[in-house]
Image: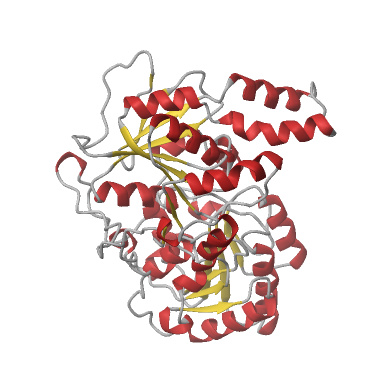
Length: 464
């Protein structure tokens, strides 16, 4: 990987097909990118060199296919000056910016104990610190240098969005934000600024009807400033794989009935406590039945997940304690399953069940935000919907699909297509076939697994 600073740039591969296309800057949510990567055991280099899938790179691919060039902008404590990189899997430009010096000092002083971890001073620091993470002057230089015509932020209820709206007004750039399920905790500063910044945004991308209605009521945003656009997914990248081959590679028996889940392990938000309790009931229902729960992912609550699974004494839980960066590898892992379970309590418009449905799996999902929009007709749309936090309802739905799973899987029901925009045409299209230097070889007919998949597959009571 070639890295260049903003002041000295050796020759490097540029973003593909830049040309005269319009440019949009895309900013992930949060203070530092490490706040997301560290709990997953990932580095910034892994993010830049290997990570694919999810809502973020779905947006990159969809915007590229619609004629835009995307510039990703992240804030990281690992750099002292702006660095211009390339996100290798998509070819998008990636700028890594350092946070402000005051942010570094305040965060470091708190970590070292130089500042109190409680009291009025601590409360003030917690309110101010998120606004200091995004460096407006450096971000403005990037936006000008890349000739950005718009800014797209993850989450409108976040300090970074507030900063970007102010910067957008100064630079005369439209700022748009998307809802991906961020929390709504707001301090005094946010409560004062947020109504103004949300109303000042050029538009909001909100897939879930319930969230769109809430934002209209809470902030007085006109309906025509809200675009109901589901998170995009490239269906060509999620074709069904050979289930028997996938199971062979993971050491799963072909006769077992396998339910799968994948994502970031956060116990409460993702409803994984409910999933484990429900699976314990599934095991008790018929101890002789060969059923398996395949969990793919890690995160900040990995230890709590392990402890709860051990306490329940689950015998048929198989956990790949790894955040899978590569979409092709994830597709192969999901190919081992018969059905997909999605017990989340809180979401924006989740990508995980879209990926599962595109892989040909029926879905059991809790009614988190966006699920009613994804499965408005429930079973007729390829899934069963249960109340959030209701382990008994989840058990009943799982039992229904587990009993039907031995039948051959039919064609993937597939996720809903993007809703038409006001002009009547889809806002995002699927990525066109790659050509020339960017063309990738076709996926192998018999998928392989990375070294270590079998080693990371933990059987029976979980072990460290």
